[in-house]
Amino acid sequence: MEHGREKSRLKLLNLKAVSKSPMLQIGSLKLKSNLILAPMAGVSDFSFRMINRKFGCELAFVEMINCRSISHKSKRTARMLSSNSKDRPLGVQLLGCEEKYIRKALDAIKGYKFDLLDFNAACPAKKVVRRGEGSGLLKDPQKLKEILEIVVKNTNTPVTVKIRTGWDKDSLNARLVGLAAEEAGGKRGFYPRQDQGSRL
Image 1 (tube, helix red, strand yellow):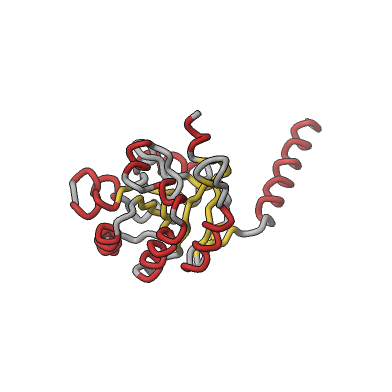
Image 2 (spheres, one colour):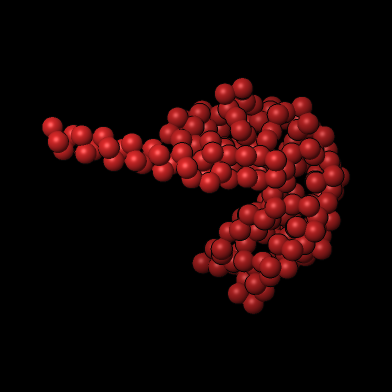
């Protein structure tokens, strides 16, 4: 009996500790939990997000989406963007490097109620990097800054950018890229690996 009371007291103490934990704030978005579901292509669909929310995840992302795909308004992309009022707060992560398609994508998602927009400058997939997208943008911090300026100016939600330490061990430019992102009005999301190193 005494052991049961002690366990209950510990649970209560843990709950108090959680309630007093500092709030996570990203721009105007305020979160009570630091449990965030990442945008994972082919994984973080609506059903998966709702399951994670039951286990304490507060902020979740739809799957990573290419700006070209959103621009073409395909049925598959529409399914990836689908949500409801219980699926909140919700973020979207965009992938791209061409201004034309980035602008079109930003216009297309205005009809959705996203609480955070993350721009991907970290994806190491070969087909992505070949197009100059994802971590390929780490080779050109100025171009990434110009893209982020477009994104920030054309959305009312907080904007973050996911980056790596650099393209490879000889170009660790995370600080330079991060400063460029902040100058553009974005917040940094840091992924501590190099692009080339992630494929070894």
